Length: 159
Image 1 (spheres, rainbow, N blue to C red):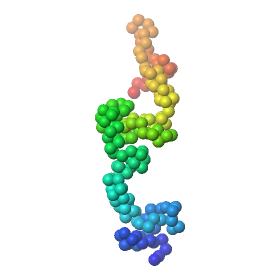
Image 2: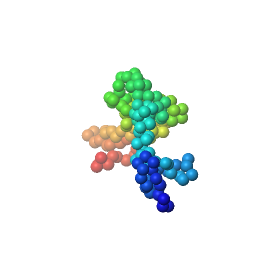
Image 3: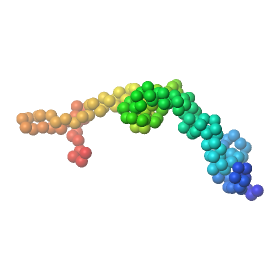
Image 4: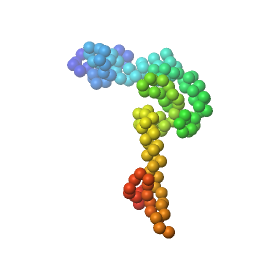
């Protein structure tokens, strides 16, 4: 076999090394099966052992299955634990402990992640939002000025 080529035992084809997933577990640095066959084997294994990719993902990542997911969602009334949007799909967990906290919608789960699960950062964001509301303030009879309790400049005319 030529250099830079490898045989896939599933599809029985000789393919370039780049068509095989890389791995540090083999001396060759490549898996035995080409990418399409490797992926098909992974899907088959997830289906056979866990009943599908969703179940495999939930069990591997969060230690719960679809049944536990459904039970938790039912306990939340079928809505996002933060904003109340119906049919959330994302498992929220504590990144330090790995413990599942609830089921959230995409936006709430991403928002908590952006704030790095920090109550301090979230509290600061709330303070910021409450303190930067632009208000009309009467400075003379019939004369108003736009101001904010924490900012010195008025809002843009384009916003």
